[in-house]
Image (tube, rainbow over all chains, first blue to last red; front, side, top):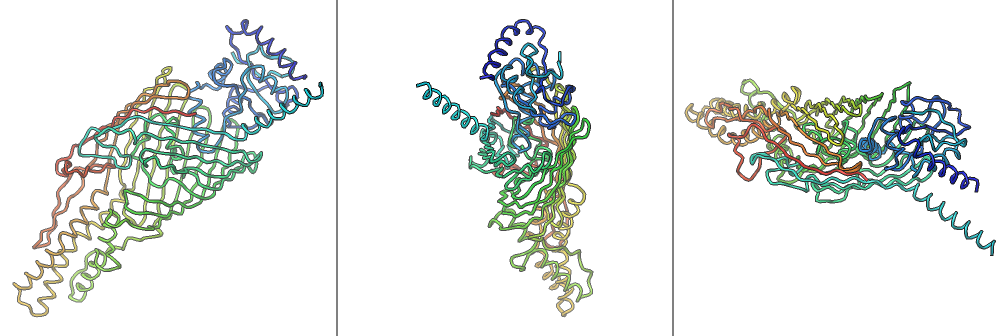
Length: 143
Length: 477
């Protein structure tokens, strides 16, 4: 029940704030509040989301991705990872079909990312800053 | 009533979690390519991919489905089934393995995997994963691409660098149409990769110990083996030269250079490759150099490499690639030794016959006639063998101009034009049927291509280049 409440509240917050933040289109990297990770640079976050490393500064991280077509996803991959959707799919196809890696699990909205990250200690995600609430900790905002 | 609702809700919840559990345990991915290709020249064909002057769709079409089932937290089972037009859409398990993540950095795999000979070898069928409609054929035309066995993968990070090591051992087997036989290979190898920022570097070394399992009757492999080894040790170049030299020794004549039989097992094949890619999001550069060495056996082995540069403009990426291959001096010497032995044999046989006859008191004119007859009998076999071997000294170069268009994030359209030339020349040998004197003329080479066997191709008047045009649609899903 607690989760559902939070889900609704953050979804509502996201709706309200979406208009205000759309033009700025920053992207916030969030982790669990209990995580030992307090800051990270874009390179480290990119390599975590590309499956190249399982920890940042010695803290284990598990990325949660967003589905293709989500605005935050496009922002994140262009600004932080420096790959468009085609390049990203080409990258993952080289790993998936050689058994060298699988892309992170996906959810379908900023609010769900917040929910998952708030729930699990090692999760790391990206959302538009408007979706952030106090159930998660922001470690980097990329403009 | 309330209780019933509650329990229904719980059941739904459980059901959902079981469903999501299933769907996250089983992952299905796939890839697909299709298109059309042809080459512009009636003399040449690239039979490995069924490319000739008639347009073909089947040589571009491939479908792959991969299923990965997460058995437990650290163990998964993966199968990749691929159907290719060039193989009549027969479904082949290109990958079928169990993978165990022993630690966060260390993974062991058992089962069928693709052999990581070169940079692109493990995902050759996944057109979406590389910029061309097909990787440069100068390097990427190896037969038997799977290894059934064990692999160990170790990955680690040092600062901004990601390192990976892949060690494997196993066996491979199968028919190779172009060699007219079936083979068993004992494979082993190691690759290193290092990545940082836009750069990826890769080094690979593989070794195969090849055994000829069977030979297709009447095929090119049988011709070569029988021509040199004879049938059950009878006939063939090796036995002929041994007999000639034994007689030459008795008669006080100089022997001619001897050759070894072609081995049917223990053939050592070494693959080496060094590659890099640079991809900063806009500029894409891929380069690779390779060497293939085959010991004690006759194969067109040597050095290959390519350099590709592409630049992305939004959804478009034009690119250019230079690629080259030539059989190296070790290979050429090996081939030439057999050719020299074959063309020297009739003359030497004539000399032995003449001197032997004279020694037995046969009159000179009659001895000469006997010698000529012996030469005459040996000429056609020797010529066939030498002229069959000569095209194994090969070279070619190509330039590809291509463009990739992202139709959407999972589908690309590609168009490539590749001009192949610099085929060099090879010798065509003629042996005088009376004197045994050897002469040779230069013929234009045809590199990795074959000559069409419909009688249109004339070895004396080949075109010096050919161009392959390919349009393809590649998708991943």
